[in-house]
Length: 90
Image (cartoon, rainbow, N blue to C red):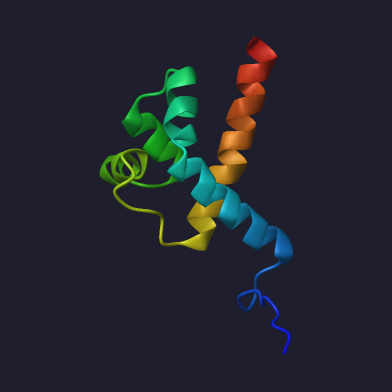
């Protein structure tokens, strides 16, 4: 018997990869490191991500994960842009 890994309805393979990357960013503390490297306050970073400060804090402290796939995708895209800014200024 073979098993296949199915993607959630309406999601592309890229979406699924971005969601997994988003979870890695949060689980490894990368989100907080990027925020601090950019010298952004938690409230400012939360506004950029479209969430409230307490939600961002709970992610940074690894107390909870985003429950919306779109938020995880936004985190990945944001972190990649932030990382490019950091690299360009180094």
